[in-house]
Each structure stands twice: as C-alpha cells, then as structure tokens.
Length: 202
Image 1 (cartoon, rainbow, N blue to C red):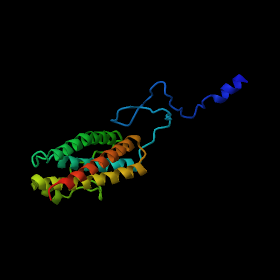
Image 2 (spheres, helix red, strand yellow; image 1 turned 90 degrees about the horizontal axis):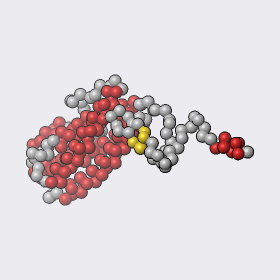
Image 3 (cartoon, helix red, strand yellow; image 1 turned 90 degrees about the vertical axis):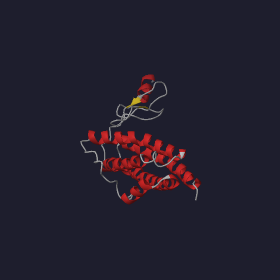
Image 4 (tube, rainbow, N blue to C red; image 1 turned 60 degrees about the horizontal axis):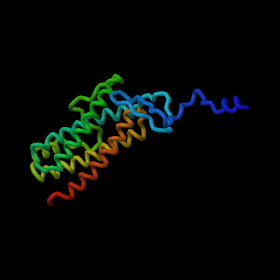
C-alpha cells in the first residue's frame, strides 16, 4: 500500500513542475534581457512561444516612437531651467535608451532589420508632427515647458495604446515583459506630467 501511495503522488513527467520555496530557480529571458528568479508556485517547463506578428509589429513601431521621445528630451537642457522638466527628460531617457537597445537586439536575433533612424511610428501613436517638433525647438522657458509636457503626455498615451495591443495579441515573453514595463512606467509619468502641467503659470 505504501508503494501505491508513493507512486500515485509522483509528479507526472510531462507536466511542468511548480516552483517550491527552498532554492531559487533561474529562468532565462529573451534576447538582451537578464535572467530572472522564478516566483514560488510558478510553473516552468513550457515550450518557448514563437514570436507572433504582433510582437514584431510592437518592436518595429516602438523603436521610432522611443527615438522621438529621446529627440524631445534632448532639447530640454538648452531650452528650460525648470528642474522638474529636466528631471522628466532624464528619467525618460534613462528608461527608453536601453529599451531601444533591447528591441533592436531582439529584432536582429530574428533576422529582422532594425527600423531606420528616419522611420516613423505607427499612426495613432501620439507622435509629434514635424511642425510640432519645429515649434518645440523654437520655444523657450515656460512656453517650452508647456509644449514639452503636452506633447510628451500625448506621446506617452500613444505608447500605452501600443503596449496594450502587444499585451492583448503578442506572445513573445521578452516583448510582453517590455510592454508591461512601458505601460506601468509611462502611466506613472503621465500622471506626474499632468500635475506639472497644471502647476505651470497660465
């Protein structure tokens, strides 16, 4: 009877084993991403999901989208002395530069070309037009602060839309994790930028 009970409790070989709490289990991630530690109770062992068209579309669209954000933040130092605006620019640049690198490496690993420097983001993604970018370059002081915040809030809202589409339709783990980071981080930044915009002199 003891043998029967033990056999009945044995783990079926084809099922992924749940992670216990005794020793950490390292789970590899997508190209360019550091490995992570599995959480207690998490099941691992499933086959790697192949990227879908939505995953590729997300990376190819988000790279030029991020590049424009970096172009906008690059204008800040010479056009405003407002500490809050400078901090926003620094935080955005610190977050988005490595994300561009990650997405570019991921596309290259698939044999896909990285979007050219002059590539445009997808329609409806909140990107600034050429006329808006030229107006931002020409602005100074409070006028620059207001325009920067207005354009960047819209830009971030477009990124949330793109990240939401990726989370709905994408399957690649690395791109889904990136989309979650974009959605979480930029949602927080939108709220902060709206408060900063409301506090500017009328």
